[in-house]
Length: 194
Length: 58
Image (cartoon, chains in turn blue, yellow):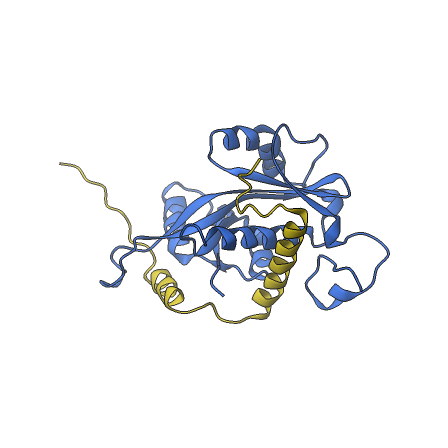
């Protein structure tokens, strides 16, 4: 039987004699300083892994998961709790909630050497899987994230949609502070109900 | 007396979420492909015994 590729598209079941296979991934939780040499091509995300991830985890602000591929650190994902607000004025009187529980994919980095192989999509799928498992213990309806503007299309192709709720406020803030609205991250969500 | 006026959130966005809360998300090819990856990841974690949802187990 063919081993599954990362890609969940038509060529998922093609037999291949080379990397990448899903079975090559080993899950780890960040337990100490990450291995040297990880570079995802985005300075902010690479720096976060080396300078902030462990400290944030020890402060119980977030948890970072590592994805090893054939023994090499291929990707990481940092998650924390979140809540999606509903507008007070816009909320229907019967709606009892001001915020909807969510798990936030706070950081995602894929090593340059594994980009374009579907590892990033697999990591997002894993985060959704974990959020869904967690939703059985605590209320959690969405996976949320703040996408860099150039990655919005990539997340949309994974089924995420833009949070107009949050983004409107961010745009207002950006304009008020003379920042370029096109440069601010885009709030997005994935509905876990399915 | 001072106060800060909180700008309203998007009416359209709130309505969108309210409708979503009442109904499951619409079926779309993007979601189907992602859900396939979700199942692959879940199955792999189960095989590796790494299923603790938020990785809290050391």
